[in-house]
Amino acid sequence: MLCVSRGLYGLALLSLLSLESLAVSSVGPSNSSSSFCTESRECLQFDLICRTHEYEVRHYSSSRWVSTDAEAYFLGVGAAMAFRRLYHYISGANEEGVKFEMTAPVLVEVPEEVKMWEPAIYTLSFLLPSAYQERPPTPTNDKLYFTDMPDMDVYVRSYGGWMLSITSRLHAHLLNRALTRAGARYNHTHHYAVGYDSPLKLLNRHNEVWYVVEGEPVCGSDPTDAP
Ligand SMILES: *[C@@H]1O[C@H](CO)[C@@H](O)[C@H](O)[C@H]1NC(C)=O
Ligand SMILES: *[C@@H]1O[C@H](CO)[C@@H](O)[C@H](O)[C@H]1NC(C)=O
Image 1 (cartoon, rainbow, N blue to C red):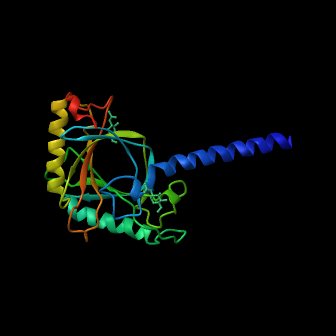
Image 2: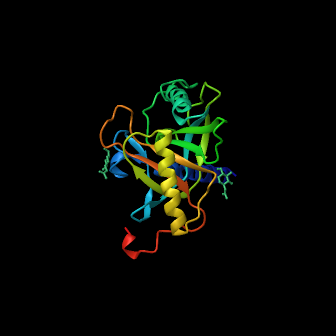
Image 3: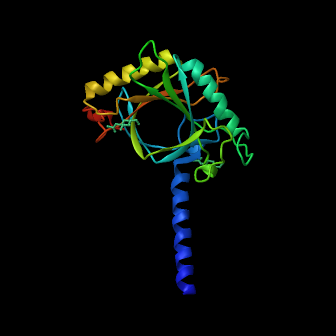
């Protein structure tokens, strides 16, 4: 009896450990992921599936984020408020009172169908560091919640400069056009505006726009496009 329960305990521990290592593998040191994720100690890790001259296809493992919604006419205004809320959380506004460094990237979920005369709901998310992927501190602000991003493939277009709602929509539109030309299927309800740099960085800024792949990813028909 003792043996059985000890065995079960071992099993539970084993599955807990493997869960933990799964989550940890999606968030890692910035030096192992990419040339553009340089400002934070930890970044979201990915596998490059293929690249065309217009976009990349990447695979991301599941990951956990802390999120908050902003209702706004323009990405800028609502995003600044939501950003401050998330920043407070990582600066100790949580029940455990723990502080941790920001990771990269910051995600903004942008709805595609917005009416000019109605505010849209944008969702901002900070990636939880590997140490808090499994057991994140409890937020004290009830406007914060956790988002589990599933294992997914995304179409990515990168651009430099500042991420404003107008540039973000422009690059979403350009990616959208390239994907339509390639016959790629993706979720049209929203895209992600993805930022890697703090506002203090002035040069070599890196931003991205993502669409979530539906079905098999399409990498273009030109064989020289392969990585
Ligand atoms: C990244 O940094 C960590 C810790 O500083 C080090 O152990 C690891 O070897 C580095 N990885 C690469 C690919 O440079
Ligand atoms: C597209 O994304 C939305 C929002 O995450 C989701 O509700 C919807 O089911 C997705 N559509 C498909 C076809 O997966």
